[in-house]
Image (cartoon, rainbow over all chains, first blue to last red; front, side, top):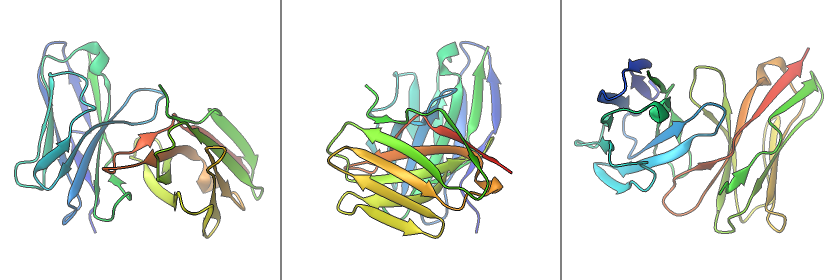
Length: 112
Length: 111
């Protein structure tokens, strides 16, 4: 079946622009996670949804970052007024069984 | 504060031999550990996991060992194959399922 998909795969934004990153989880997966992976590092947790409820947003680095999952399926991560330090790969993962998360290919964001 | 550490950024192993990847953690609250494999331009792929109540889990060529007293886990791949060349991430979890990752080890299998 189809895995987790993310779009766009690559995004170049000028500093100060707003961006929106989309995640389509595996159908039926209740849990959805966003991670940020900087170059040479492991993914770092940003936020977590169970259905449409955002249960943990402790990893969001600033109030410029906002995530939603209004119908409990597709999720969008929005970054306002992008800064150079936001340049990273943004990974989305979904899960049905606890602890076994399936990752999408990621969106590589470059802020110039 | 890096709660999950992979101290070897890279490892090269001859094809057919055993690959051993190591991971240390500091948070004793972690109750589940996972290994992910990542190819370039792809997301991490789940490989194998272990609960904190066990000390070994095996799946085909992959075995994960957990030493709770040392806060250490390792992934053994035997025999190593060229397709195993990738970056391997160790991850740990407790509570609400968010994963805490290490920085990864790049494994290269030499034919």
